[in-house]
Image (cartoon, rainbow, N blue to C red; front, side, top):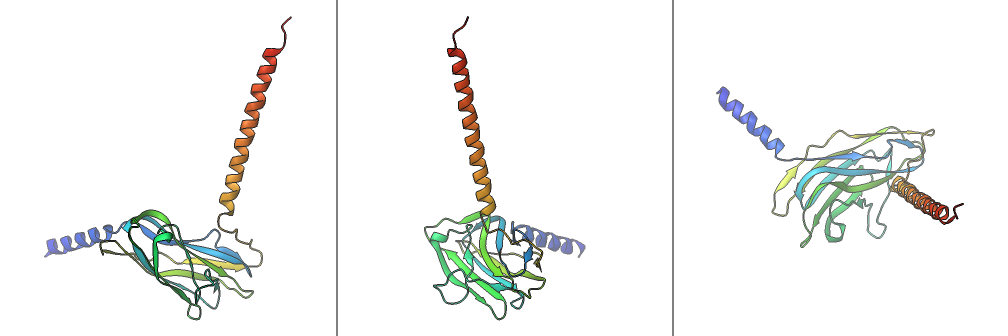
Length: 213
């Protein structure tokens, strides 16, 4: 009997390990200035080959407001990420219930799009914090991924993302601002390096061109 229990426990462990990777929420700064807009990313890491996802998220609709990212479509939408191929994506459902504070995101890639694997941003959500915003949290309730061959990976949601609000906090930078600033700084460094190299070579040429006495 002890051996049977041991084998069952081992098989359960192997089953849990058979679904590598994780899904989680992150934001640039969880300390939000009251009255400002901010964003939260749904991230995945080290996923096996997958082709689609069914995702349900919860938030407190009394504390924060979801900002619609597709005004041409009825309802409030979130923004597609870069993990799945947005150019070959079939959207079954991308809508929020702004009264209950639930968001459903069900999408699948379509042939001949290749399966996605590894790490990346699955989706991005924009929110606004009203003048009376209070500390709250955002959580993943359901996270299921499907493969092209019909297999399913179900992930246990990680801890909720806690958000706090205060008038003294800084306004969250828009996505990509830090990356753009880094890119501009790197370009400036290369330009300075090239200019210094040019001046150095010119100085050496002028030195060689001077007549010797």
